[in-house]
Every structure is written in structure tokens, then in C-alpha cells.
Length: 424
Image 1 (cartoon, rainbow, N blue to C red):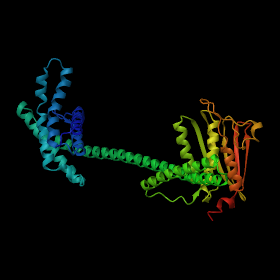
Image 2 (cartoon, rainbow, N blue to C red; image 1 turned 45 degrees about the horizontal axis):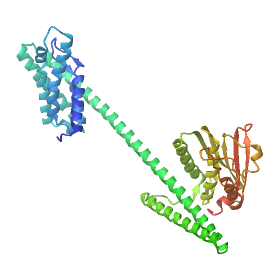
Image 3 (cartoon, rainbow, N blue to C red; image 1 turned 60 degrees about the horizontal axis):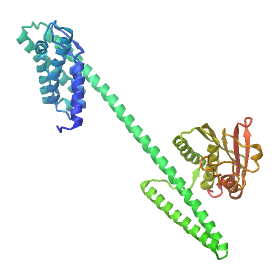
């Protein structure tokens, strides 16, 4: 056996289990001779801890069991010395030495696949070892055996059956524990891959946004007259292009790591909701926010227009998050009515002042500011949403309040054919 810390710890653990199990016993004779459950514990541990040598375990418990029994009696019987008590229990050592030799000789560990052969072999090992111990006690103490041999054989058979039952019970719980660990690891792996794919999706979306920003910046550069502003526009375009290349390298590396990553050429609304839900639950957890997210998709559609849809929902959910201080709810709904597909983002945050409803979608308008720096928000998010809804999807967006102003609802209506236009 390789002597390492793990094996030493296992040997100590096994010895303690077997030694304490020895206190559960039957006494067929009015003497110190016992038929204890230590044997069942010994058998089970010898099978489960197969890296531990049989004779090492048996030799160790052959010493610790009489020592422990003598200690227990010494603490309760003060009139008898500890050494005397130890020698009274010492003959039990012959049992464990005999048991170890026969267990090794009959190769009990290899008979587990044949239950009947395993139990008969174990019965013989147990009964023979008990007879060896009983013979030694008779020789030392002149004890009358009488019908004890028959009792030993019968009790040995019962203990063998109990040992086999105990072994299968422990095996069941060990396998169940291992299975639960594997399932937990599998779930964690799936969750990790899911999060990684979600991040990959959003990076791809960012690349598409960066591409559009680069085109607009270059178009602006071409329209400007020669001068400082034109040079600055070209510099911005170059910087955006460099950012795009960096993002592309990140995506390429992630795609290599996820060799089986599916192609996001089309996505369903439910898949978009799953990505958003996972992303924002993780975000709220990291920010220590107690926010309940509810995503409801009544009528599922498949579209290739998922980038602009995610951009719309992203902005609205972020807007809802910023409206909630620490605790609240955000409900995202999707459903179809006739030729229109509806998206609703509803939150119970601080709400919108009625006088601001007509100004919400104006570029640069914002009521949000950083409490630390005092800087106002850019006010671009909602105007960006309105532009995508109206110009890209030919839809409409409106905002209202529900439940006496306690909830704010952003309601988007898009022609179904516009969502399905590219996909079909």
C-alpha cells in the first residue's frame, strides 16, 4: 500500500468505525465471548476501502477492540485493573487475525458478483474465526462450550445476511451520493456553457452594433468638409474599427472553445427570453438586488431579426432595472393578436411622472443621473428603442401606467410579417 495521507486517514476512520461497532453485540455464553456487529462493519469497510491491505486493517482492530472494551469496562468497574481487563478481552485478537487470513485466502472481494458464493464464503470465514476464538477461550479459561457451536453457526449465518444487506445499503447510498455529485457537476457545466453562450451572443450583437456605428461614422467623415472635424471623424472610425477587430478575436476564441456552438442564424422569441432572463438574473444577483423576473411568451415566433429585438428589450429592461431601488418585479410579455406581435415590459419601480410621458423618447432627455459623480444619463436608450421600433420594424411604442400608477408599462406593437420577413 502506498502510504499517503488519504490512506492513513482511511485506516483511522475504518478502525474507529469497526471498534465502536464492537459495542453492539450478543453474548451466547455468560462470559466475555461476544458476537458483535464489528464483523459486519469490518466486512463492509474491507470491501469499500480496497486500497487498504486486509491484514493491516484486521491487525489494527485486533489490537484496538480489546483495548477499547477494556477501557469501557475499566471506567465502569473500578475494582478490576485495566491491564487485567485487557488480557481478558485479548483472545478476540485471534478472531480478527483468522478472519483476515481467510478473507484474503478466499478472495472475498472478488465474489461480490455472485451473492450466494459471497455469503457462503463469508459465513464460513465468520463461523470458523469465532470457533477459533472460542477454542482459545476454552483452553485458557476451561469454559464449557455445550451447544454454543450451533449458536455460533446460526448467528454467523444471520450476521452474514445482515452484512450483505448492510453492504448493499451502503453501496446504494454511495452510488446515490456519487450520482448526485455527477448530476450537480453536469448541471453546473451546462449552466456555465449556457452563460458562456449567452455572453457570446451579446458580444456578437455588439459586433453588429459596432459595425453599424463604424459605417455611420465613416459616412459622416465623407460628408464633412476638410478640416479638424473631418480628421476627428476619421479617427473615430479607425478606433471603432480596432474595437470591432478586438471583439472579433474574442468571439473567434470563444467559438473555438465551444466547438459545438450552434449557429445563431435564427432564434425564437422564447430563446431570446431565456437569454435575457439568465443574463438579468445573474446581473441582479451580482448587484445584490432582490428583483423578480417573469418572462411570458404566449405565441412563439422564429425570426432572424433577433439582434434588433434584443436591443429593444435590453434597453427597456435596463430602464426598468434603473427604476427599481432594491426590491421589485419586472414582467416581460410577448403575444400575438391578429396581424400584430406585442412586447410588453412592465415594472413596479418609481414610475414615470405623467408630465414626462411625451418627452421620454426625445434624444438626450433623461431624469437619471449618477449620485456619485452627478452626471446625467445620455438619454439615448429610449430614443434608440423608438427609432428601431418605428423605422426598422414599422411598429409603434407607447408607455402608460397600471394599477393606479404603481406599475409602468412599455408596450410595443410590431407587424408579424415584419418580424418574419427575413426568416421566411
